[in-house]
Length: 127
Length: 451
Image 1 (cartoon, rainbow over the protein chains, first blue to last red):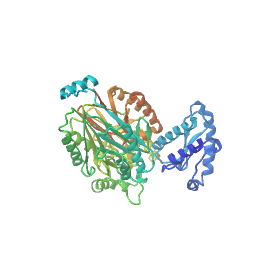
Image 2: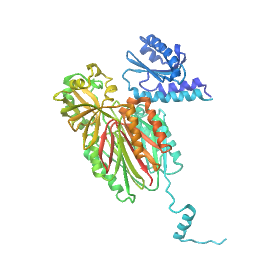
Image 3: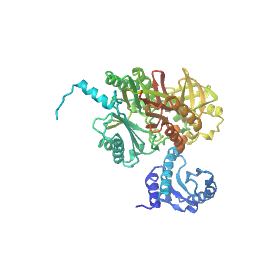
Image 4: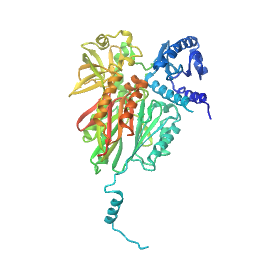
């Protein structure tokens, strides 16, 4: 029987990571604590800006932690050639985060991120 | 024990006494879904899940829709091979690639879904027309003539057609990346000629779907028709059609139904007129390209009318133009189109501009969902057994995860009634009471209803 963390990792690695436009995805809170299946390929691609990405994402989690209780649902930012999408797990300080190319078809990706979020919430809320 | 023989009429009397007179024919509608990455496994799984829900009944037909992902995970022939491991041999099947789909289970931009119907009071014909880009009229005639012939002797009064033409396929020029904005005036100048050549000889280019629909509806005048153009993941480079156990390109497919179920159809879009208009004074490539607006170069004049800065025309342009579609009026109908490509000074639209008086429209998620409410209340009744919906890829792209608001709305109104919505590139509808419509950013619902 897989642990909840393993099940969530499965959602990330089997449902989201194989999508062509998903450069990275994770379920994390501030300090990027959480489940982060970062591939070596991605790290190589974003090595130059990873520290900026990390810092920017981290500062956004202060906003998420504060406003999640008021129903904050999604946050996006564009940084260079990437969009970073935060699908907040309702009422928590944690988000499903995806890093995609800036010109990706965002609407189609959002549908799958929403599906993943619902699956993850189902895992978290299960007994 | 004494054996007593009964005559046929005595048996019917006995049967009716036990079952009630005129027992209702049993209708079964089954919907399956697979999210497997492997094409073969996905085909098997979607067919297994669909057939399970039919509980042993043989399907009259199957509709099969898939996103483009299987192209790189085994290919679509493998997808079909998986499906046919399970489906009864000879089951009428049509389908295609779509950008996404929605059903009672959720909203998806990756996966494959199937819808199967089993009903005794139904005759079916599946048909195709070939070489849709090269000769859309001939393709339409090929498809419609067979459907007409197959269903001519059907004793059921109501006729319905689900149509799937091949949508846009942008030709790829070696050395050039596909772009939405082409600044080079030279390339923009030769593009209409290149596209004309490409559409006819290479069968890469606009789908010419409106011509197909008009010609099909001319032959199948008494049919109610719903459908939409197959597409990939909104890149518009390739798309595929599925007919029985084979994969095709540049086909138009049709599922003809003759039944005692009564079809109904309704289209809405929720687009609002902004009050801004222009005159498309010079058009080319079968009225798909606007070269001049108000007798001036189209792009610069458009930017002035919209009040947009030049830098809005970058590769994110669709994130803006999807919210500002264009339309013209003809015989009281609003025909809509999306400004899809910007080349030199010209604008290429998704659908032909057949009247020079063009309106700039506005799209919002709220106005769309309000229009769906009106659409549903006009068409849905407790007798609706099956609901087909076609919606524009632009709506999928702009609403993103908010498409779930639409899914929840549909579930609330339709309850357990199975529905299948496909996101395609050009929504098509026709009925004997309505001219053929080939639209962009529209939402078309068709229902099959028992009396």
